[in-house]
Image (tube, rainbow, N blue to C red; front, side):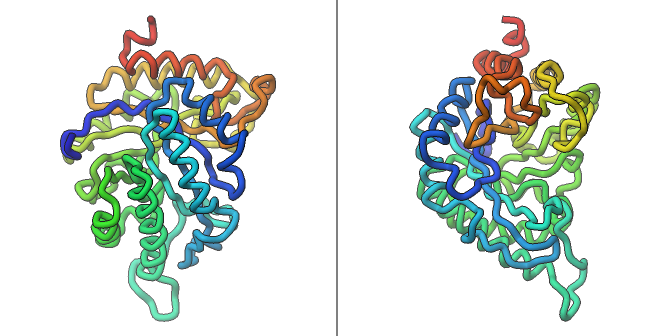
Length: 322
């Protein structure tokens, strides 16, 4: 199937975040991925981060700890494939001082003596090219070239050049994961094969945001799926599912309710290609401790059955009631 007519259903899960060195191989990692596959997952985004010092740093030392080693990346890809999953490799840059990557940014115009977009994109391009080569060698079906880089989205020329440089290295599908609410702000969607975004929308606003995204997609004639989507099992999180630090006690029911609403709304849209849900760690908590866990992972929680039922139904609306 050509990239232009790609119409697979992505019943996916993000695995391994943040990609801490030493955690992606061994019995715990193998167990984690095998448990994830049981939910009917047919795709996984294997996600790792490299750290730049500050939002204005221009070097991304992806070869340094704590980032996973190349051998770990290859092992994770091979494990996923052995379990029958297709793989999207997702290298992401984070900021060591804790600033969210969406705030990485520089002056619009080059100023002598100041850090610049040109310097940063030169380093970022090498970072993505490194993992693009691994993705090609290991047969990854998709590569995500960026995640929620909101301040970079306006740098159209640099993104087009980066993707053009990656094409000779990597022959599979290329996507960019824009942040929530940003789908209509990226002006270079024609450069990628698939449009993807982070679907952390309030539980009562799904229809409105899907209407908006549908309007964006009409401009580009590209397939779409949510490269991230999910909700912590925490009180109040369905109203602000993107906020991993929201105060509130653990609530498995809140997470389950959110997934039911999200799946129900998205199943009505014939252009929806699925989800790479957030998220599934390389080391799982004990199943007996699930009710006390208030994070995104749904292992051992009621939402796991909601996800499994939906994925195994082929992501059809009637599957929710099967």
